[in-house]
Amino acid sequence: MKKRTRIILSACLAVLLVIGIGGYAYLSDYYHADETALEAMAYQTDSVQTEQDGDVIWFVPEDPTTGLIFYPGGKVEYTAYAPLLRACAENGILCALVRMPGNLAVLDANAADGLQQEHPEITTWYIAGHSLGGAMAANYVTAHYEDFDGLILLAAYSTKDLSQTTLRVLSVYGSEDGVINRESYEKNRANLPADTTEVVLDGGCHAQFGSYGPQDGDGIPTISGEEQVRQTVEAIAAFVGQ
Image (cartoon, rainbow, N blue to C red; front, side):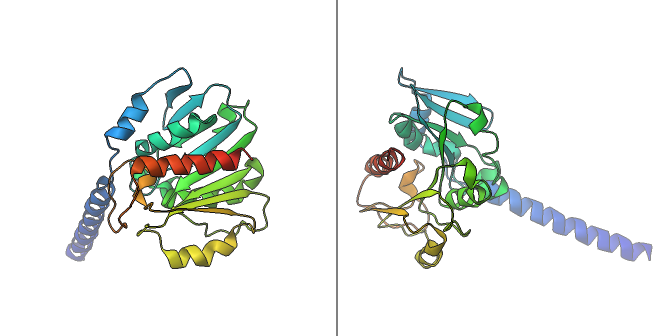
C-alpha cells in the first residue's frame, strides 16, 4: 500500500513539474518592446511627462481633460505601447499603461481598479486595449460601465453584451490584420452599441498598434508602424474629443 502511494505521489509530482515547466516556458515566450518603444518611454518633454507608479506607467500631459486606461495585447511587453500612448498624451489625453502578470490581461482583468482615483481632477474616462487586452477591457467595463464614458477596442471585440449601455465605443483594426478572428469579430459586433464608431486602417495590421515587431500569423502591412500609430491616435483623439 505504501509503495502504491509513493508511486501515485511521484506521478502527481511529475505531472505538476511538467505543467510548471510548460507554463514557465509559455509565459517566458513573449513579444518584446523594440527601440522605438524604449525611446518613447525615456523621452520627457514639457508637454508630456512619463511617470512610473508600480505596475502602471502614466503619460501625463499639461492640463488633461480626458483619461484613458490601456490594457496591452496578449504576450506583449506592455512598454511596447509607449509610442501609442505618448502620442495620445500629446493630444491632451492622460494615459495609464498597465503591466499585466505574465503579459496576459486575462490574469488581471481588474487591473483598472483604483486608477481613476489617482487623478480625481479627470471626470471623463475611457478604457481601451489591444487584442486580448481589448477583450479584457470590455469585460471590465461591463461591470463598471457607470464609471466610464466609453470603450476603445484595437483589433479586438467584446464577448460581453454592452449594447444596452450608454458607453461610447470606438473599434479600430487594420485591413491586413491576419491575427484577429474575423468571424468572431462579426459575430460579437451585436454586443456593442448600435452607434459604435468603426475605423478600418487601410494597410494596417495587427501588431503595429504596438512597437514589438512582426507577430506570428499576421498579415503584411502596407503602411509603416509609425503611420498606423498616427492614424490610430488621430481616430482616438477625434473620438474622445466629440
